Length: 195
Image 1: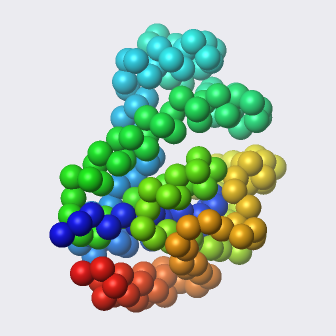
Image 2: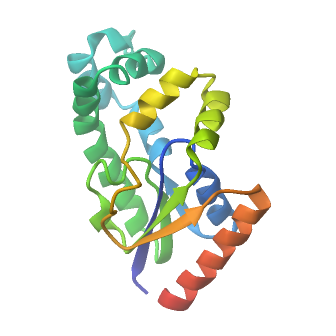
């Protein structure tokens, strides 16, 4: 059986991690770009590359995540520089991990369209949620203020425009149990189509 790769994406605070966790709980292989990124943060070569670009974000051979976030989320050019280093490494590792599995394999990919990685996947689940709910969710989760969250949203892909690739929209507009029901329905559709 081939590897069928399905991405889970959406704007910040949309609930894509919740969707990915539900899929994992249902017994499917799920990989997370954020977990790969955490591993990268301890990789010496990666730390050295970041230190060359953002010396103020590295101290004692360690990347200070809060400093790096402060730099890149307030400067579009700095964010592009960081992404040009981190995204290819993350996606190469993600691809390696997904290729080690057979059947339906899922990945939570926060910046899928921003990085132009949509063609790596057979299907893409875009998790949608009302903007105000997203803002409140991220403010609570990250202990951020409203302006910081809005700034991050403004730098992300605009999901109201036409979206490339084979996309399925999943509305996260109710309770977690309702979201779980929607995910289960979607998984059943994928199993019918591919397995």
